[in-house]
Length: 173
Image (cartoon, rainbow, N blue to C red; front, side):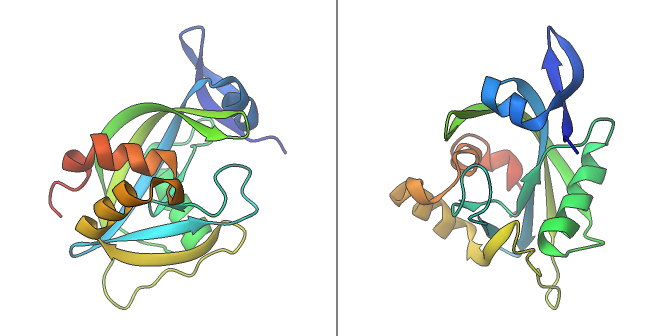
């Protein structure tokens, strides 16, 4: 079944096939989640089977809402699908927009609702190998330094979030 995501076409929000949105660089909705444990952030390394940015480190999880799906519901759903995490309380932080070349002729032009949550000790991710090949907890200050030193190892959107939006995303971290 073709995945339809909310995108703006001729100024109106309408369902668009996900791959078409990326091929044409159509502005579309997305969510991103950052799970924290004190000053550490949970990162995932994208599975090699992903159709863009395989093997790169990214924020805890991200995706596109289905047509008609609320952003918080989408974020909760995706934490379960990618990392086996259910019942994590998420707080909305901000909506940001970016446009980035993600390789292979694909463009992410996203309007992203960003959520942050605290994951208690004793709750660990159980990665879905179709989505995630590895996870790591890393101190936020180390992450910022690592991305600056080795940007090619991280997704374009994580680089943008850290460069342009870290103050809002990590306001209480």
